[in-house]
Image (tube, rainbow, N blue to C red):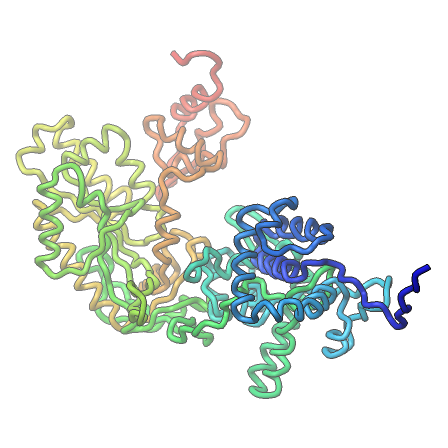
Length: 605
């Protein structure tokens, strides 16, 4: 009988829980990164991790992992790239030596706080002991991340006496930007995510509540408590620049690779290349801005002035973004329809005349109007980039709709004229203007009599309240645009412009304008153009108002008033409703017509 082998005494080495710890580590990192950004691919990575944990054999490369479930070409390619990079940096000899450390890292992800919790204050439990329930640490956004800025902004707004308790999206983005290192509107190079992406995580964690349409954002009770803590850290950072800053930094750091509710402070928008150089000149200032406003005196009917002076129009938006004097330029925006199609000769002449007069203009799509002016922020080009960063743009309160006599005739016939006036009144700009080009003797050969066209122009000025400027041809139109551009440039050269929200300010004339002082609080071009979309989704009341306006004799103001009054009465329901400045009744005849339109069964005779 052969001699038996000597018995080895001592502690056996524990077998690894996963024979592919490097792949497991990289997949866990990919999953956590996707989870922080709110990507749905995190679930795919989690399924791949589960499959890898069940596989008992070591894998030489990622291609061999294709036999496993939930391992596709994309995941295998990423793992192969990481493996090649690892072998290039560490060599194959060290690959086996790192197995233990990788296993320890993976086990630390599965355990609760353990030693890390003891180092940070003993808040986490030990992971080696066994089956005790792990303590769940509160989810806190990292300092100067998107979620951090949103929570602080909503909290500070709620502390203002008489505040409405919620904020709209564009208002929230504008006021939170100076608290965040990343942009809320422009994604980083090579990424499609902005700081605003973290709001979905805040809603998911029940810190922020989203209601209504347009969306209103407000803090929940949990969010209010968290925001109070963040505000205390923020104030402490300002009071103590050294010691308190270290304390705030320690509060903002943590283990981002937590699992099963483990410890760690998670940056809701962070990525591997978060440490980018900050653009100090582009960050919004935190002090309360002062607005320089303009006194009202009509110059050519457009409400222009020579001597701007201070106003308190922006006291309602203390942290609104602003453009200081000298940091912006006035640009004329021309709708692209005015430069293409139709009578190409006249439209090319318009462009050439503007260039000849030295007017700074930009051709773009305008959803309402043909000409308007924006204050565009001056931005210095960045070395190494082909194009300079896009500056902010605020729309001045002046918009022009250009009409030739033949175009006016066609728009009256097909109903566009009434609709355009309705949309111009509600576009958010306070100084709409009609620029009417005479056609000379050609007006007598149009489909409508010349007297009808002249009456329509007078009604536009007297009844609808638009300023109407009459010119003879394209050259006079360009001359008027040139004079207006130069005058507005001079008018706004010493003004501080404040960005306001159209949803908050409304479309009507402000109190400052009624008292003779037009405000310098302007809406952004993006918000203006989006709000002026012609075919955007409409409410039932808006559709009903459009239907009412098809009835002869029903204007937009009458239709808007009737939408709130018509319910379940009969023919005389609308007869006593008053409208306009003179408070005239609609009358029984018009009320009966509307009643028959909606309540008559069968065909209308």
